[in-house]
Length: 189
Image (cartoon, helix red, strand yellow):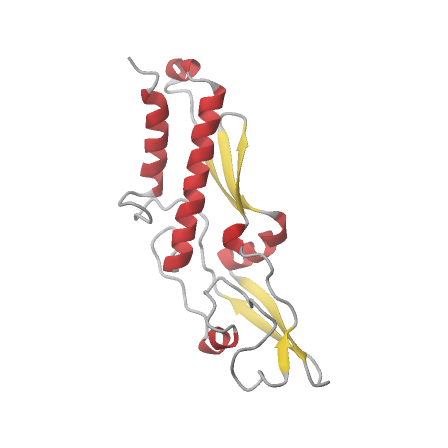
């Protein structure tokens, strides 16, 4: 799962010949970094790149996680509330937050990707597109472990918000255009 940014040089080939590959790579890097920040805002607003609000976590899960953010799985093994909290704990925790695992990868001087590091790609994909997940509660008193199958509703988060402004009153694609305009302005005239 990744979002990409491409430069089509056919229209402005003459101008682009005067711009160094290093400058193009920097504009792509800056654009990717902007998308990461925009995605972080989407996390906080719990809103997809197309402006739609996510479905909230069920109350029991939000309570069990101690009120952690929607895209944050269990942050500790402790179950913070509910009838299972006295005899069970989460069998595993998400040691790495998805928001801290986004990276920009620039390929040559024409393409950049914003994607997740390998250790969170599977979780990010299930969150982005929805799907079946397992939640295991480990007994703290010698009882049998409990396994829940959870149907995760899609919560699209990675992408370019081109229908509404996540940051600064402009859509993501308008911000990206501004980044490239600044690069091009240095070579005009």
